[in-house]
Length: 198
Image 1 (spheres, rainbow, N blue to C red):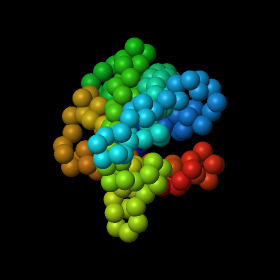
Image 2: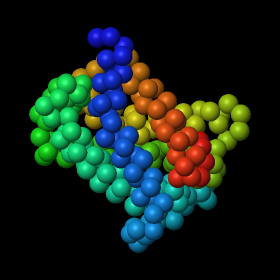
Image 3: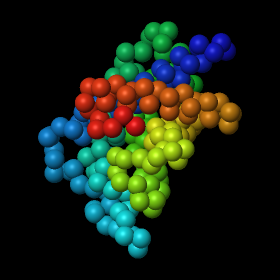
Image 4: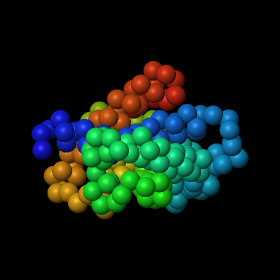
């Protein structure tokens, strides 16, 4: 398959998740349902004196990823139905384009997105990195990449369930997703929907 078609398939497959991530950033900034703006770690620290995940990982964001992914995948399914775009969606290699199927895919993507962000936050807290901040030097760029790639690792695993792929394809997919995530975060920063660009 030509490279452009492969890239198109990658983007079409996770377009709902890309949109859901943007919507979740807006949702987390909003004053709506602030009663779920509670840290997942409930403010608890480990023996090192640092938080488990930090204030930036909240139940509001966790639920937002799931809800928006489910909505976006269902809507994307409707938009793609009966068009050539539908053929580019890797999920439909293993499942039909039906609202219930798309809702399930959205649920899995939302869970993967939210859960795969947590280990990175856990590691950063152990290193004493303040939430929303980064290190200096070479270590900074390692975490810049991890910050953008962590959720993508999880989402592409969900794609693998329906569209088996080689390890190399998986890693390239994650890389494309991470670069896309960086570009989107830069746009969100310019629109003042993010505190930091990276």
